[in-house]
Each structure stands twice: as C-alpha cells, then as structure tokens.
Amino acid sequence: MPGPLYIPVLPVRAHAASAFGKLDAETADRTVPLWTLPEIGGGARQPADTVKKALRRIVRVQQRRAAWLDTPFTALDHDPYEELLRYCWSATPLLPVADPARPRSHQALAAECAAAAGGGLGVRIRVPGAFRDELTAHTQDLLVRVGVGVPVDLLLDLQAVLPARPDAAKEAIRALDELVPLAAWRTVALLSGGFPDEAGRVLDRGRGVAARTDWHTWCELRTSERSYARSVRYGDYGTLAARNLTRPVEGSERSRYGLLRYTTERAFLLASFLVEGRGETGATRAAARWVTESSGYRGTRTSEGDRWYAECALTTGAAGTGNPTTWNTMGNIQHMTFVVQSLSRGGR
Image 1 (cartoon, rainbow, N blue to C red):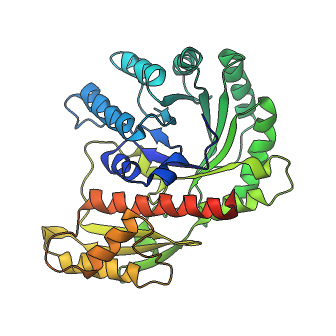
Image 2 (spheres, rainbow, N blue to C red):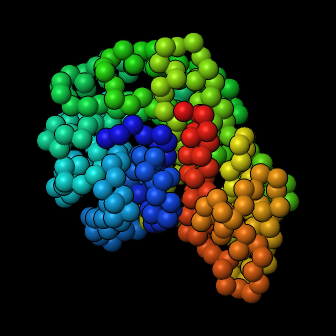
Image 3 (tube, one colour):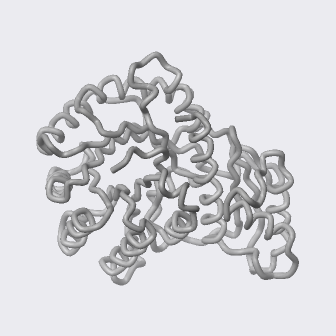
C-alpha cells in the first residue's frame, strides 16, 4: 500500500460511501480511509444482510484502492459474521485492523487475514484521554502474535479533541514515544475528531464557528522536536463528531434540524435550519448562502461539494435542497478535498 497523504475516519454508511465515491481521482488516490463499521442496532431485521450490503458499497467505491476496515462495535469474529469479515479482509482492498484492547479472538482473525492477504495490518490504538502504560504491553503482545513479515500501520486515535482538551498534542507525543519504537511501522498516523459534539453550543441564531482543534493538534505534534514528528500522517473524523461512530446504523431518531458544515483553514462553519415538515427550503438555501458568502468559501471549481453549496444557495423552488444524507455527503466531499489540498501545499 502506498503511503497515504490523508486518513479520514469514515463510518460504513451510505453518505460516507457516496462522499468518497464522488471525490475527484487525484484526491481519492491520496486518501486512504479508515472505514469503521458502527454498531448494528436492534432495528435491523437482518443484521447480517445489513452488514453485507454496507460493505459491498464500500468495496465498490474503493475501486481497488487500499483502505482499512475496522469493526470495533460488532463481534464480527463470531458466526454469522466471521466468514464475511474473513472474505473482506482477505479478498478485497479492505485491510484488517486490530486493536490491542479487543478480544484475542478478534486480534487473531485480523492477524491471520493480514498474513494470508499480504496487504498489511492496521493497529488502531484509542487514547481518549491520558495514555495508559498497559497499552504498550498490550501492543507488544499483539505484534508478537502478528509475527514478522506482515507490514503494520500504527493508527493512534485520540478520538474527540475539543477545546476542553488543550493538552491533546502532549498526550499524542507521550503515546507515540512509547509506541513508535515497538515496530518498523509502515505508516504512523494521528487521528482525532475536532467537530463539536453538540453543534447547538456553538450556534448563535443558527450560525456558528468551531475551531479545528484536531488540525491544530496535529500541527503542534509536527512542530515538536521528536525524530518521528515529520513522518506522522494526518487523519480526522471529517465533518462529523467523533462520537457519531458509536451511533447504531438503525434505530436513531431523525432531528428536527438540518446542519450544513463547511471547512476553512482553521475552523468549521456551521449553519443550522429547521427541516420539520420538509417545507423549509428557503431556510436551507439561506444556510447555503451564509456558507458561500463567507470569506473562507473556495468557489464552485474546488469540488462537487463546493459546487453543491453554490447551487443550493442560488436556485429557487423546492428541488435541490437535499436531505440529511445530501448534507453529510457534500460536507465531507468539500472537507476531504480541502484537507488533501492543504496537505499537498506543505502540510505533509
């Protein structure tokens, strides 16, 4: 697998698959997602079929490009899912992911598939707060079970990194100081989510700005004096809160409000609007206009997401205002495109 420029943490959901599938070829080629299967909620009548359909969609949009697939919330190492996961990790571009904190049965299946397929193994280590010393020992044990000859990628996941966590970069350095020497890692990446958990807290009359604390954390790490700092890749949770991954695929309630999201160099722009009754197309267009009239808006030629914002803002009538899937899709298209462009200009 070629070294990724950008690693977005994407849920195995329709909107995320659509967003990645609509990226221009250059952006997609430099982006290696960490696909994460959310919990399959009780509302799914046929959970196995739900998983199969979702994963087929991901394989299709990847178009033979390598990516990681993690299943942290679902016991796919047990029937009836084990055969499906073994197939995905061995016969598709989706590379297995192991977590030192997960059951040994799951780690063993991931390691077995990585050895059989030869594409490598992602080692995802979650550090939602201070780094715990036992994680070093657990990671060592996992690497011993993987054995030599299997390429390994270190995916350090800080999860939510919001303004209330100002020492996140120091936490990352503490963790990497322990983990980097454990193996000849093919990739070392820092993942974190800076989109606010509760958008309403940053809104004033439906509009708000939230700092991209995940990006700031990575930049702080990269300017540290550690020998590995400049080689650490950037990854984020896009324009969704990190906790969104824990929301089940089925059974969630639909919000009365829609939310448009837009990424600038240092912040997220948020525009909320009432969608109850589906008659508020004017409010949706007003939110899109607020985005396109901001100083950070990059113009219609930047990406399909940017173009959609302009079309939504300028068109009249009910058509073209979209729905939650549209808003999430376009938000992530513009975000992923902008991040790759930023990294290409020197963030790398």
